[in-house]
Image (cartoon, rainbow, N blue to C red):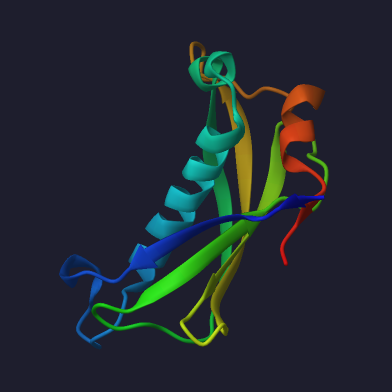
Length: 135
């Protein structure tokens, strides 16, 4: 089985809010960053040129946070086949102790870069994502 895609994020001064921890809007940006990096790591040059992904929905559970200079490891994986042009992406951020402090399911739609129209997610793209193991 394929492994989940992982990335490390470090809380910088621009990420910190008045409560002295990472702002919720930053977590959303990090979700987009890890999803984009995952796509760029598995797509071929032709797919990168032809397609783009657009977020259609975020569902996020915040169970903790980090402060300036602290790191999290983000994990993302796809666990279900797409529905037409859309599928759900799972994302989890684990702190230094290995605890999941932010968890999300985000819905993404595939777009044709030239026309900006939705496209059904084809089998060659599905195969790159499915059967991932979040452990």
